[in-house]
Length: 421
Image (cartoon, rainbow, N blue to C red; front, side, top):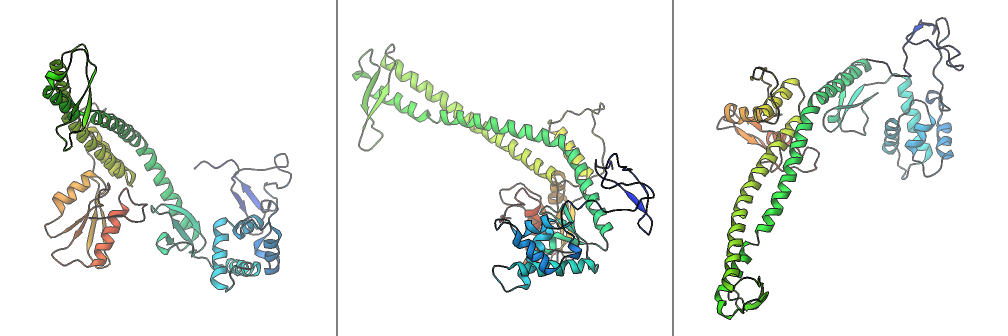
């Protein structure tokens, strides 16, 4: 990787004397801290922050009281001490609440929790943990499992190096996947936007065509009163025989036409509107079907975690005509089919999850047997989930785990409640 502008790697001997560094810093660059072979290594400037390793309860409590009352304890600790992040400060405050009976917490409560935490750091009581976000992607590396987060979002490692290796490996993998899916995402977004605009226009035409019945009514009422309509009038008011109390209804007329011609004009508008109504209804169904398909592919793309799945989605879009095949031969490249995700429930049942349309079809139509259980999010785009029963009754615990997987691998994964069929 390319190093950042202000980063450096410094090699020292056992006594802290600098042997060499990637970037050498002399007094022309920094008068405060030289980094040169032979010099004694110094920590970077503290930027006015105190050293947490030497802090006492009294000192920390005093700093907490120095700040404005509008500042939170987390902000104060992270601003006052070197190496204390907002997350660590929040964890210290959580530990203070856990151990104290005071509500609200006193500065001494927080200061005691702070010093206890730092004592653990000085004693090397580390248990490196990788923090995952709600989507299962690496978010941070913590010195130990913080109680701020549920254990299912924490992955424990034997060393910081292992945790950091996993963090950067997964982050780089996600970045590579994002780069490879960016083009497909743009194609899908453009087509989804096109379908939505098309649907809006078709819906407007449908609303206009819903006036068909009023045209038929006008035509019939004009015909019923044809001998009472004088020539050259622009409007008539006649009883509406189709309603119980026969209220008067005003009908606009073209004064240049006869009553019979006006009636025929309305019947033509009625027939035209009926044709448009039927046609627009079919067009709307087609557009909605295409929109549903594109959104389902976009959902599948959002949960891709390997190149084989991305290539399958690309091949599908080529086959459906959304991407022009530029291979020259007219044939798509043969790729090794991606495999559905496989899980085993707490009761020992195999659960399979399809990640795209190809996997979903294969699972539902080829893999699943008549005795297996199929799950899918209700009215939400998502994966097909199959519980392989092998003829055994499936307990509720396995059903719940499979339903959670169906919800997680769906468009509704960030919702609090997701209905699953």
